[in-house]
Amino acid sequence: MSKPLSDLLVLSLEQAVAAPHLTCRMADAGARVIKLERADGAGDFARGYDQHAHGMSSYFVWLNRGKESLAIDIKQPDDLALLHRMLAQADVWVQNLAPGAMERAGLGSEALRAQYPRLITVDISGYGDAGAPYNEMKAYDLLVQAESGITAITGSPEEPGRVGVSICDLTTGLNAYTAVLEAVIDRAKTGKGSGVKASLFGSMADWMAAPLMAYEQSDTIWPRNALRHPLMCPYGAFPTSDGSRTLVACQNEREWQRFCEHVLQDKAFAKHPQAETNVVRVANRPFVEGRIEETTRQITREEFHARLRQGDIAYGAVNEIPDVSRHGALRRITVGTPNGDISYPAPPTIRGEARDDYGPAPGYDEHGARLRSEFAG
Image (cartoon, rainbow, N blue to C red):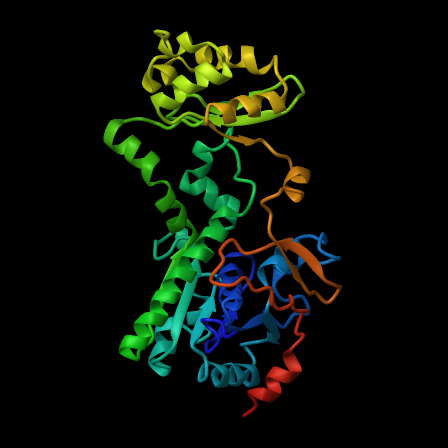
């Protein structure tokens, strides 16, 4: 079965996470993705992040399935000429190098679109078009988590915390993917390519809209509440007698009343003066959570979950990594690598019939000789 992007050729001078996430999604959808790597013997530095995936980097194996790898040195005239021959046939050009690097190499996006009018160009950066000092700053994921304020609302009351995966990079890749699909549709109408820009900071600033409005419009600072929702109570994790924790969410008064009746088995507590509305409960969070823990610490996780189901209360187990590895809702794919096949979580969306024909993650310059022959002058 043909995939929706099977007629697209994507060239990506990419590294790390954000751009590879974009092009991974494009490869999943059928695009031919040629990954251009530095001709220094190492290539994409994400190859060296760890050795957890059959001796390869887990991030690299995850985000580079289905791509072809070509080592190229754009400072060398022959390789630059090769790149231009490839660009003449390409539909999409992606790069996430340091700001200004492509312009200095004569490969700025505006210049490329002028030379190749149907080309869609994608520039991924840390801070977009912001001026100094941001255009000179490195923009690794955790740095942008801090700059964007994500760490201000993540962690415990005592200390900010990091979101445990590269959320800025990953979100930016998805945002860029959406914009590229829009550009492909637009090109079908106009016959012309367009430029896409996506930044890590911009991606996180978008997600910070609600806490920023709370501050700017009502002078309210969202607190760091660990496994608690800042605006609702009870909406947090509670311990049980067997050492587990379960996260519970009551989002309206009907749910709160059912929670008191079925979980606490204390129907009258729903109307306690310090617990009768969500606003009051948030203001008296230690009192309310203390009363809940009096009950949950006396029952097992199994009993806790049974009561929650009886009351039709939303909940989720606070799982550790081994729990997720064997989770009943976890879908998997198997992807090839130069060191053998590996299983990991499947892409999150299903379009039509499920397909599992994902290409392998490439070795460094694995397709170099063939690609140089294919695009020879």
